[in-house]
Image (cartoon, rainbow, N blue to C red; front, side, top):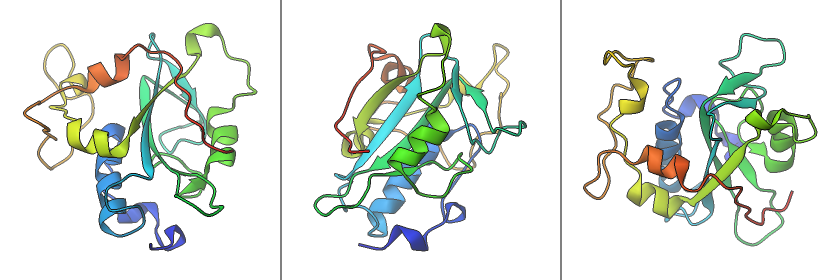
Length: 188
């Protein structure tokens, strides 16, 4: 497997405000270039959101604040847990100003800031999808990025929308699937 230290975020397709599509393409590239298992079995896609669609994350490139905080409606990242060995879990977040990739523990500490007391409406929930399932099933026609008049909220990527298994859109189902805190055993 290729060492992740030889990669930087500029080597990956990135369209601001389309994190779910960015992560889809990132997972595909990590599998194709040997950084991840070819089938993506060491990758997990993490959707972060809540019922009010207001989640604070720090160290975000889109921020205009010194602390880098952004209040997203949702955010999507990729976590890599390599099989065997003592490698730390890595977070691949193309929207973060932290090192790319970042070890999971410092990423959580700096970006999610679990020790920071939040009002309940900002409580974050995590939906974890194994990358092989995400790559096979994710679809988005980008309708969530249009306002009520049908205008783009943010300019879409130049490539065609992602379609999977005959579906054209299932992002909302992924985001709202129970909105309960899901826990996967990642060693910090």
